[in-house]
Length: 276
Image (cartoon, rainbow, N blue to C red):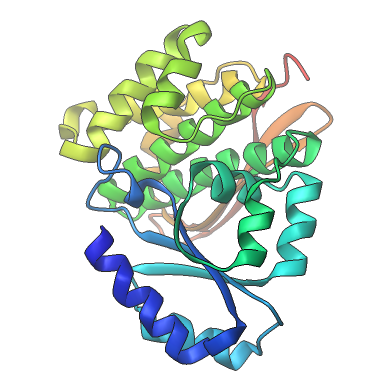
C-alpha cells in the first residue's frame, strides 16, 4: 500500500503545489484484512483554497478509475467535522494520512460528534447500497451485488453501533459491534467471506435475502419476504431501484423493462418501521 500511495502524494504536490494541505486514504483498501478485488482506493485531498471543477477533473483523470477522490478546502472540512458528517469520522478516526501540513495536524486533534447527521448518512447509505445490490443482481453482476450487500450490512451495522455511541470502521470492529445484534453478526461474517472468495450460485439468493433482512432489522424495520421478490427482479431489465420511507413504511420503487418489453414503474411496500 505504501508504495502505491507515495507516487499519489508526489503527483498531487506537482499539480497543487503549496495549496495542498493533506492527503488521506480511507476505506477497506487501506486495511489488508478487509481488502477484496472489488475494493478501490478512496482519497480525501484537502486544499487551503478551493480549486475549480476543471482541476478536480484533471486530478481524478490523473489518478485513474481505481481511485475515488474527493477534493475539499480546509474550511469545508472543518465544518464537516463540527457537524458530525460521517466522512469526517472515517477520515480522522479510520483513515491513513499520506501527507499533511501543520494546519491539518491541528485539525486531527478534533473529534467529530456522533449525532443525527451521522446516523442519517449511515441509514441512507445502507439503503442506497441495498438498492444497488438489487440493481446489480438484475443485471447479472453477481460479484457487485454481493459487494453492495456487504456494504449495506456494514453501514447498517455502523448505524446500529453509532446509536450506542460507537463508530466501528474495520470489519473486525464491525463484527465486534454486532455481537449484541444476534443473527446480523452471522450474516455479516457470511457476506464478508463471500465478498472475498465468492458464493455458490445456489446460495446467492438466500445470502442476499439474509443480508437485506439484516439491514432492515439493524435500521429498525421488520423483516421482509425477499426470496420471491429477488427471483422476479432478476427476470427484469431493471434500470433503477430506490428505497424510501413514507409514513413509517419502507417502499421499494423499481423502474425497468419486463420480459415482454413492457415498461415497469412500480412501488411496493417492503417493511414497516418497528423502532425509531
